[in-house]
Length: 230
Image (cartoon, rainbow, N blue to C red; front, side, top):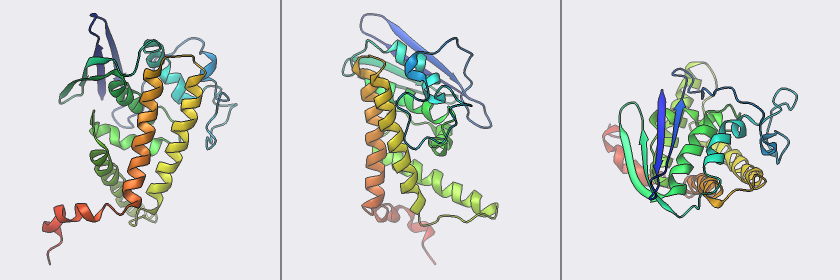
């Protein structure tokens, strides 16, 4: 499974990123790189809920895979508008938008496919990647993914969470990662496009939790009337 992100600036410059994902696991297939910058080290603003061993992972796997993206946009201002196109196997999305909108989606895909134990739980959503999604679309996809995960747990003889209690815990953990990673990026001395893209991801996670806690699910119930008949 491949994803392609392309940014075209008004001055004619283009920035392209080709993401190759393992078709079975959706793990990002990253080429071997040389030495990493200091901000990539696992101990640099390490996430407070990180379970990785520094001996086994001297570099944060997410940060290591984001080096090229951060370097490419280190001089970009978040609100500058560009033409963004995202190509998947079956379709292409295009939009003229602030550069941070496209960078946010790109960073999001890299983060959940890089092997972070806290972010891995969002990886199944990549198979239905939806660029430029709003918070309600994201909530719908997250709920669908989570409930399908509970079905698979049930089939494996594990206890399912049909009440969605652990989904909020998952997003709380993701929020910690996003905020700690923002602190990590600040040490890279970059402009605000990548930083604001990450802040945007954190806002989405926070708003998704807020919608769940606000009992927004009953508003979706009317869409499923055909399933609720006797």
